[in-house]
Length: 161
Ligand SMILES: [Cu+2]
Image (cartoon, rainbow, N blue to C red; front, side, top):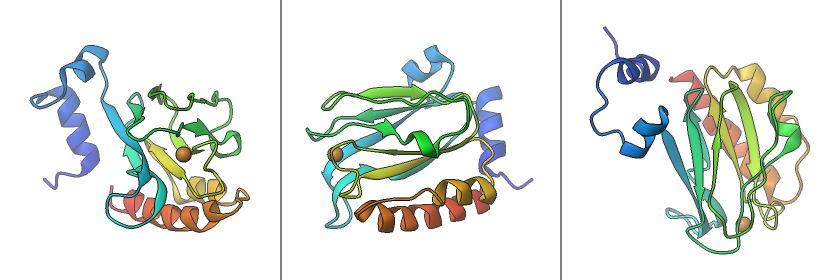
């Protein structure tokens, strides 16, 4: 049997939980961390979420960590599934959001949105159609070119998952 990521997650939920953080076990889901950074770790890009695109299972959480000061994580209300409440973290604060609804979630740092500090969370079964819809939202400044890269990364991720 080819062990796909999806199968792996199911197996993880059913059996092998070794290596899963205790906190995640207690909460019954996995918490994925995204760092809020002044500079990307692998390039000279400034104002950066690492990783900028993250794929998680429905029911998992993302914790944005205020590694560098001056940043926050806020959902773009035009880039989240219908009926889902937008989150908005405070500057310099860690914020943890649990994602129960599958879909594409676009977010940004409020003061650095036009500087391109944006990211994507892909929750559960994401289709190319969902990506295209979110990618159609108008962007300003550097967010435009960053999102072009990130949506291309997202397409590759869903194709290989
Ligand atoms: Cu920022």
